[in-house]
Every structure is written in C-alpha cells, then in structure tokens.
Image: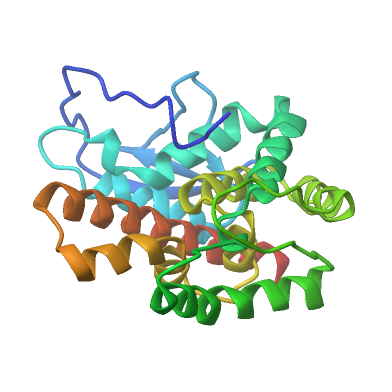
Length: 247
C-alpha cells in the first residue's frame, strides 16, 4: 500500500462552502471546525489530530483554499485522513511497505560512473547510513550499479520493529516518506530530525540533479520536482508537530 498513490481528485472539484476555520480541543486531541462544524474524513470519522501543531497544519490547508477545494494540494489533510481511517487496521502491511523500501534503499545503490556522481552520492549518503548504524543499529550493504542486493535480515527486522513502535500518525508518515524518497533510511532520518525535509528530498534525487546539471530541465519536470519538494516540507512539519506529544 503506497500512501502516496491511489488519490484521484474528483473531476468536479467541490466549491469552498465555509468561511471560517478554527480549532477545538476534542477527544484527547484537536479537531478542526469549518464555520463551527467539525471537519470529518471522507468516511465520516472525526478529524482529530493528536497535537495542536498537526491540527494547525491541516487547518492551514483548509484556510488556504479559494473558490474551489484543491485536495491534490492538501498533503497534510490527505495524510491525516489516511492515519485516521486506514493505518490502524493495516499496521503490519504498512510496516511491511517500509521494510520493502529498506530492502532496496536508494541510499545503498551507488553509480558505477561517472566518478563525479559517485563521489557526490558518497558524500551525501554515507553520513546518513553511518548515523543509522550508530544510533539505530541498521547495517546496510552498499553496492555499485543497479543489480539488487539483499540487505541483512537483522536490519530489516529492526526496521520493522522501529516502524511498529510508532503510532498511527507517525507510521503513516514514515510510509509516506519511504515512498516519496525511495528510501526508508531518509524517512527515518527525517523522523528523528537528523535532516530537514528539503534536504532529505535533495538527497533522494542526487542522480536526477546531476543529470539536470548536464542536460537541463524542462518545465514539466521542474513542476513535478517542486510539487514533491512541497510534500517533503509538509512531512518535516508533520514530524515536528508530532514531537509536541513526545515532549
């Protein structure tokens, strides 16, 4: 289950039907009110976030809508919907997705050539992999080229345990990040505050950036990159918002 796939904005976008967006304390967390009425998920469950910072993040997306509601731009709202409606009943499957990304983690596959790209990958990825080993006990095998290499079973089991130790809101975000970056290592680094969201995104697209420097970038690719970068920044704010509860 890829949490970043499967979303299709309706052909006819709903018009904005509210004027004011506010928050209320509710059910041990914070709910979002649209003109005083509780916002609900698509399956009619109450939209209650565990911290005020997360509720503020979702509320800001609703406040930013204009004449029509552009759900495709509301990344935090969509992640909140998934965390509330889906993650609780699918935790093992979501953890398995995170394990699968760890099993073919982007940061373990170095280019064979040119040397300039290999050096850039090494400078960017090695510090994160080293920290993952030192602080989380995650030992990854690295290789040159695209041929698949199995990762140690003990590492994958530790990844699974780390994922399942998270609550639904963090577990869903980890899976979102692993899919966004093609890397569980980078998602875990972002979760733990080792690197900010835009830096994690940059680390996930070193190959693409290298090719763009050589061949240029077209408008469509630039638009896609900008959109994905916004998702990474949203995810950074999401994890930061979750830390309120731990603090």
